[in-house]
Amino acid sequence: MTNDENLKHLSKVIVYKCVRNTVLEDYHAKDKLNQTEVMALMKEASNKVYTFLRYLNEEGVDHDTFMHLAEQGLPKDWDEPELDKSFVNSVAVMKTTSVEELDELMAAKRT
Image 1 (cartoon, rainbow, N blue to C red):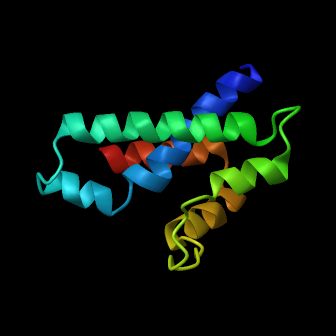
Image 2: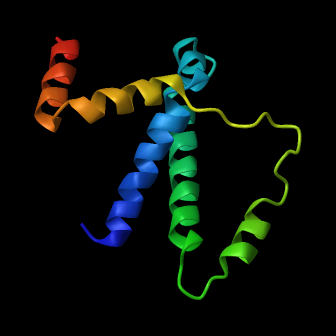
Image 3: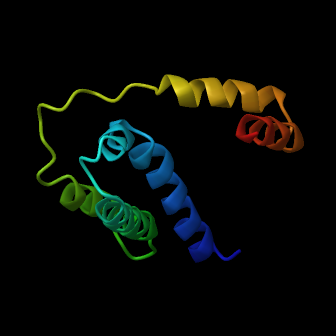
């Protein structure tokens, strides 16, 4: 994969793990958002994350200026982020489990 293809894939993974698999999934399950609306949101979020990652370390783009512009409008009263327990648990499992074993575990959960 090229660097750009990796960024596109990473963007989709970030949006899936950090946006889709949140309370948003509960809203979708309760028909507060239909499939078309969810897919439009995921596409827009993926595009924005991809664009952000693409230009974050772009040669010729000043990192401090980029971040200054990117954080304009960021609410000052948002809670500070915390480590997500499910990710922390996943990383702990990953450290002691091979990719093949993880695939087997995931396959077993689907059956």
